Image (cartoon, rainbow, N blue to C red; front, side, top):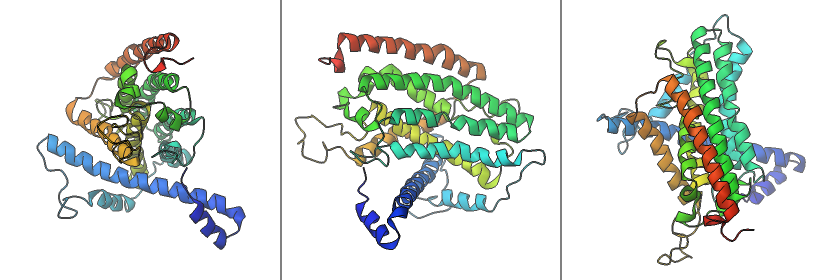
Amino acid sequence: MWDWTPLREWLEGLITPYWTTPLLTVVQGLMTTISVILVMAMYVLAERKIIGWIQFRKGPNRIGGLLIPGLAQPFADVVKLMFKEIIIPADANGLLFRLAPLLALIPSLAIWAVIPFRPEHAFANIDAGLLYILALTSMGVYGIILAGWAANSKYAFLGAMRSAAQIVAYEIAMGFAMVGVLMAAGSLNIGDIIQKQSGMFGWNWTWLFPLLIVYFISGVAETNRAPFDVAEGESEIVAGFHVDYSGMAFALFFVAEYVNMILISALTVIFFFGGWLSPFDGWRIVPQDSWLAAPSFFWFGLKTLAPMFTFLWLRATFPRYRYDQIMRLGWKALIPVTLVWLLVEGLMVYLQVGPWKGQS
């Protein structure tokens, strides 16, 4: 856990102890939210720059510093959206129309409470962390359905139904992949899942490689990213479930999408690539008391950049799939693969093969 003792003592000197814990919780939440939002802003800029580079374009290059042209572009976009009017359709359900963007964003931010950035440093070190993540990742679909239904528009509703059906299909495959991680670690605690992995070739990606592929593909589909962005229908030429949203209401959906991309990348690293563990841990040529072998936030952040880049690479490379192809991949390919590999993993656990050798 983070050492909040100095801040707690300072707050107790200003206010009554009764209010110290709630206020400290608010401070922790604000720190996490602001940090994730800032990373998201830089990720949007990186996406436009990287895809521009892949397509032989320059990307944003007008607003910002001399070293990185376009550095201030995400913040300029925020200012622009803040001054845009939020128009609510006359026949829409006003309450649900306003609530939908929050339902899409808040669960993706709340999950960061159980993410350990380095050893023993998570805001909430709960034993059922994996169940907590699985429960909150299932909440985002309600924001999408409400956005399409509350707008009272056929186009928005069709986009919401397409997205919801896709998310449900791939959420099952993702859940089965997480069951494989649970079987490997023998614990629902996120810190314990990381600790059970040791050495670069002892991480879960070696023995659970099919589940890694399934998990990441399902993560791309869960976030409605290309080539799975069928919320934008080919025949309607509209933006899908959020077609009637504007200004900061639309921006909340935009932020939720990119925060989920960062979250899926971080969870991929935690479940399959050892989280904050060093890839040089256990190497004889590397001194074990050096920073190269020590577990730290540096390794967690560095590893997370790889799946984050893969999200952008997929968008710039693959064309959009047809809806029937996407549903066939989810129901007829990924789910059977996870079920077969869970059976294989169960046999390896029973026969005590690989990382389960010597376990009783």
